[in-house]
Length: 478
Image 1 (cartoon, one colour):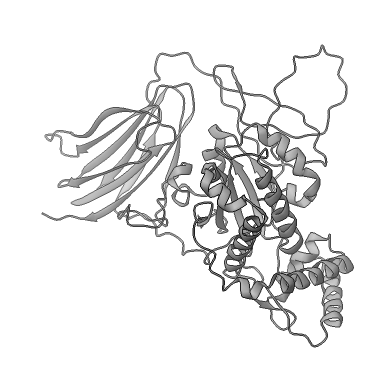
Image 2: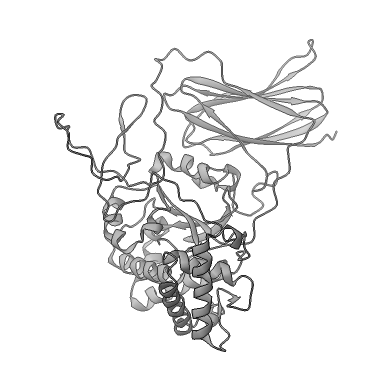
């Protein structure tokens, strides 16, 4: 599902509390490297750029520290000028990514330019004339009689380059479509919960946008796929379900000027059936058109993760149906770059465990930590150790959780008392952690004397790793 399939939850949560003051933490990464050859520095992930339409593909290669080409990222850029240098061997096609970041505009009247305010006033006038005495609500906001109207109208204006007449045509078409689709009745329908794992809300971005996950791999389940797309009636039911989910979510956004009124979309393409599936292709195209026509400017960012190679062909196919503004919000990442790409926009404590973060879906699975407990991120360079040192100044119970995405490292934990005549306590001896191991390590230690807790990650690989951890102090009890 593309741009404008916006799903939106409750308002942003309060800021997480600061760490407990009497306990200090430091981290160090200067220990002696392993005796392997020093690797070349990693090439950073490049993110956004507005793609031309249709997108000419200029392939760029990333190399890992061994000099091997990475197949995870690609830039879509205009074709370069002819070169006199000898032709290089043709490189494999790569996934398009954007190189220029999209930044949301302000919805405050004081921040609009004179021409933009004029366009807004003209659109209000046109809408007043066409609606006459009719009372019309859209996305739960009564038009022209509610202070939130300006934010709604600005969405349509931006979708039509601030052309009042074009924006008026778009919004009146949307009002008519909502009547024909019977949106008010749709909100009351019971369409089941079998698609709850396909599209769901979880957490907030770093800019406090609610995050919607679209998990296409769930459609590998043949029964679910057939029940969803098997015939035209089922595809129409899926479309109604998706619009219902969207409408319910939109109504939880804040349409006051300065409020968060857009969604951050994450599209997981791992094990996706792909565009070869005719039924999925038809449903996607239909949903894309409806959402782009009737839900403008509801997506802050579209991040595609675990992107496979067939997506290049699919993206080329749907590219003509996307506006330049829509495409400017796209970010793509292959499997190995997906966690780092998500962490750029979403804090690890807000990212579900299955996507590299520390958040378990809202349940009692992790009673010690919640989505609001902040996480510390530390890079672990190739062939080095990273040690986190936490000073403890009182009797307590300290609990912590830690992960390195993809592991391939050794992990140990040790408590060293401040008193010189006391022995260190090995809490966790150095253990090799494989990618197949549990993604998150949780542990606790009862501290009866002052000292320091050391958490050590040893990275023997030639790849840069990312260490995530957080801790809490609980009262001491005998």
